[in-house]
Length: 267
Image 1 (spheres, one colour):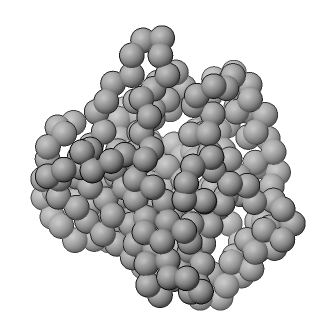
Image 2 (cartoon, rainbow, N blue to C red):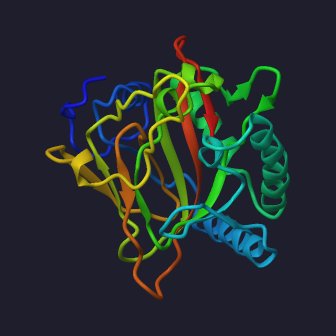
């Protein structure tokens, strides 16, 4: 993928098979599925998340600003961990996740079925041969913002099966959102820093302005009930919400496109 590219269109699109392909190919900046969840469903899921926080199910990434999550993030195991460590964490992640889902409804399954219906392709949870499923559907509290970073498995995680994807999206359903702030900025500068043999993949979190200088940018605001998808190979960050406002509560994952066109999800 060319590092210096221009989106063919500059506004959010609705979800169709064609816009999904265009987003994977970085021809458009984002897709929004409006009204994916009702206000009542959002309130119910947000209440389940807050229950999980009260039960100390939520953990926090090893980055700043502080971002809480329920589940597990494969990014936390890309450096300095054995593969066994990640798959032990996956078992606990699914157990914690099901405690939340048992109190509410399942946005992950609804989203996967939506992708199947619109694309006509198989959509499933990513798995590692001989290990089983990865975790997908991470629940996050991101009211303090998220630092600029990139997510692209072929370059970030080259020794996992998910490295076989040829395109990667991130999606989030927002179940609560601040009235101001919490805005995502996506920079059209696809990550192309190649890992060196025998070394850890290059750091792709906390990227400075040099990584996005001269790139066109697109911003979108979270709206409770909406799903937004974007190409996660592009550097992206989230601004903090206004102090004392609603939390930025969300559930999402990555969607990887395999060479045959089918899709796999992981977080």
